[in-house]
Image 1: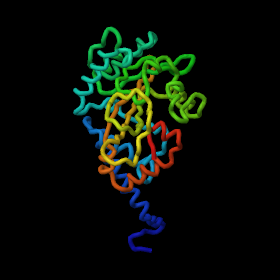
Image 2: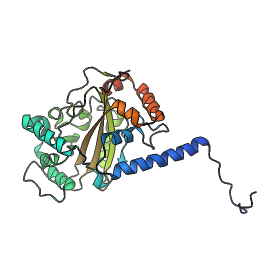
Image 3: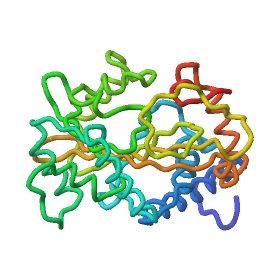
Image 4: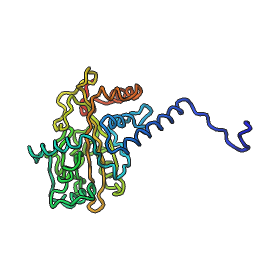
Amino acid sequence: MSSRQGAGTLPRKRLTIAEICGQHYRRMMAEVNRKFMSERYPDSAAVAYRLFCDAESSRDGFGQPFKLGLRPLGHDQVLIKDSNYEHDLSEKQRLFAEDPLQVWQALPMSADAQVEAFSYLFPNDTQPIEHALLSAGQRCQEDLVLMMLTDAGHVLAAGHVSFPSSWRLVEKIGKPMAQVHAPVPDFQEGTRTASMIERMFTKMRPSQPMVRMNWSLHSTDALRLPNSHDTPVDFHADGPALTLRVERQTLSKLPKTGAVLFTIRIFIEPLIKLKQHTDERHWRGLLRHLSSLNDDQKSYKGIKM
């Protein structure tokens, strides 16, 4: 026994190389995540990097496909403002002027929840007389959606959605969550995931916002993509045309009305830039992740391999 080790003291466990590397990786990624979540002006590459390099997801930094992946979030991190703020708000105004019904829908039952959502997001601003969620959506880069509990479950009661990813607000308004997610593999009505989401909405605490990420591949950097993938993109295609589209989704339960407020923020990055931004291990993790998707999942993500 070493002279430094007293009687009755358990010997220190020797860590394997894999465990040491794992600890170092978690510390490194914790710092990346801390910087990402604390900075109010992240770029899209940082968001994409966090999506694929989450220390809690797997050893290679890449999580499991088609999982909720919800994590707690601070109230001051629900909205993110970056250097594209003026551009995104201008684009929202243009889209609303062209066809307001494509970007703004609300059921009469949502009026009180809209006001509560506005006050939640902008507590220091004067409340609008009507269409409060529309006014809130015109002040931030995120799209906004309100889900409200009815006899049919939580339905999409109001939304200001300028930058959808393969869906149209006008087709989803008033529908339950399972029907809203009908095109998503394993999220359809009657599935375990659909039931789990409904229970989660019911049990959510108003004091704790949550955040998750979603992603897909495209051959365009357009913010507004209401149409589903007609032709899957070739993941192995050369050149900068292939883009990674990341949705940062937050969920907040409003204490007075019980409505669930979604914020959806879009970040777009050329896939080649993501490859340059991450190390080889994370890129291999992405490739393994893609190869594990079934045909329906690949089609939904817009991938041809």
